[in-house]
Amino acid sequence: MLRMTLYAILLIVITFKAQALTEARLLNQSRSGQTAIFNLGSFDGIKEGDYAVILKQIRSLDTQDLRIIPAARARNIKLNSDSSVWILYHIFDPELFVKNDKFVLLSESHMLSGRRPPQIGRIKVVTQRNKAKEQAAFAANEDKDRLSKLKNNYQTIAPTHEVSGQSDNDADLIDLEIWKKNNKLRYSSALYKSPNKKEFQRQLNLATFEKLVAAYLERVNDPDFNYDRFYKLQSKNGFTQEFNLNTNYDSEYNRFLRREANRTSADAKLFRSILEKGESWSSDYSDEELKNVLTQVSDLQEKDRRSYVMAKPTRYSWSLDYGQYLTDAQTKNDSGYRKESRYSTEVDFEATPFLRHESLERFTVNTSFRFNHTAFEASGFNANFNEYSFTLGSNWYPWYTPNSIESLVFFMGAYLRSGFGKADVPSTNEKANYSIFSLPGLRVGLKYFMRNNWGLRFIMSFETLKIERYEVSKFSSVLPENTNLVEGKFGFGLTHAF
Image (tube, rainbow, N blue to C red; front, side):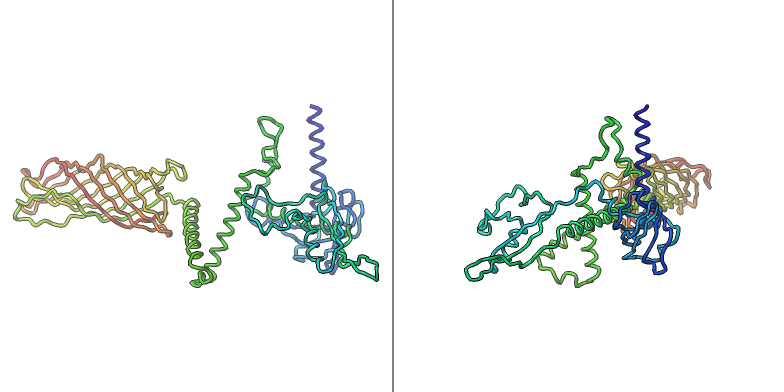
């Protein structure tokens, strides 16, 4: 219990200090706007002469947009225990500075705390004037090629690692001198002298500080960045309670994500160049280069199409079909009746109940309404038959999902049909009404959606209609009381997904 209490107190102290170092309130500002007073002082960890970048939070950190922006670069010129005076030597937006507003102040001493000072060495190169450039290059490269001056005459077959120099220093300053001669005496004379070591170290610290600030802004303004998820990854593993969920070591997966992000950026540049140059975009490429670029553009289009489908999948679709019959149930013995054309029109509505599920999204349910004009044989006579029916069924898409675009999508399904119909025999002037039932009906089809979600559909179906008479115009009618009509039909029509 005592150990947990100590951890809690330490966490509160660290959190308080971190907030004091980053969150600041603008107490006052000069008329010119170049001088500002903030409520951070020496008690808050500010060092005299500190450089800082002042940031302004313009949106909530939960918003997927630009959240924090730089307001100014500043340097401390006066330090008190609870306040400090800063020179704003580079103001990005003066309108961001409002008295008593909160800012995020990232100071050099805070951002670089815990880092050792860079180790700077100094090298003096004394050589002849005509060899000064070559010797300076050797010294800048830490003379790593001194054992292979003839390396250009040989070919490296399988390098095992990058060529790199080893040094005890983080950087080396080079002073270049040349030999001069006075009578019989030789002495060195300065040709080039590097900056002061402390001044160079200071500039190196500032460059590192600005890189850290830029990296912070890039991360916190990333739309996919979330503080809760970030802190959760820094928490202890629930199994061992010893290691963080996310270590400080770079993983192969993180490197893969960075490569994919860089590749996406390069793809975007390629598309942008094509759009900006219009039809002349390929004028700078040779035939071989153009072939490779066209292959790359084709791959990008496929990736973009897949991303578009995954980002905005459609759940519903409707179709308007016109059908023609493959089977004929009429007779040629009815000399007083001329065969009529047989057709059907159908409106179909389809839904995907389990959208985005890896396997279940390939199953859909559908319902439709059909008007059907056909004919069949009744006791040696031909009877016209007008049908009005509804269906309820399901489809299965084995290869592509129902909402795939710019792909030829195959499906198969089954359904049941129910409705009513009206039959009449012109030769005998008889009429009758029938109820209709069909179970099961089978169908296969193809459909193709364009990017605007409009497309075409082709479908073939086979079913047996069971019709049963419930009303007739004559007592002894040639129209049967019940019969089965075998129908094979193909249809095509317009479809739209939404």
